[in-house]
Image (tube, rainbow, N blue to C red):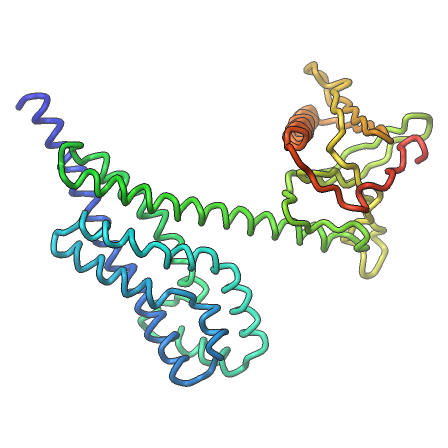
Length: 347
């Protein structure tokens, strides 16, 4: 067998494996979607347990997605693989709708489970059916989002093992591109959601609400304890810092003897990063720990750590955040962040 024939044989074998995996997983995926539509969407609609707007908020475009994927599965089973995905790609707007709604669906579902006793009982009853195999509705709702990532991976494998001269190659390439757009959108939505949850977590850690952590466009980057070194006199003070994409928040842990606030922090200073200059005073050697100097228009902050790796990580994170912020053409500064920040010399 020649090298060309050997390569062609490997392509065909790898292509067959990927197509087989796509077909098998598609059958399982459609069966799971059918469970949701049959035992939740359709019965809830008939019983009226949930109002229409609430029901649509939770399940979004899922019934239409099932219909589209059943058609795709039929094409795949009839060996019209490329044609099936070509038609499927024209309906990806249904997945876009679902991807954009998924986190809203989680919130609405949680609210209904908390306040709607009839729905709570209905959900538990449906999930106890043998067909669900122990899965909860929360496990099944993200399936269309996860499926997009699977499509991208498997279609790329099929495309990579299809000859560019094949009439199917162009259809597969277009399908990979279309699915990739939705998959990327889902990834961005997940990152925004995870970031929002981090901002909410930090907000809840603060004793007071004077410093608003949750803001549009703000990203959580890092948190950790550092020693604040006074410019003049007195001892160093251990403080908890939260680094965001636009500000550095300095906080002090509340008294451990406080009944309700022992696990919280009190916000002391908010340092805007827009005009911040970061310098490593010590720590550029292999000695233990070091010192960072942060210079702001109306304040100077000296931060120390006895951990060399931690100090380097803070230096890199602060430097990266300030450079990225200062490279942006426009920036909105919030009122409370325009106020003068207390100089560390006054502490």
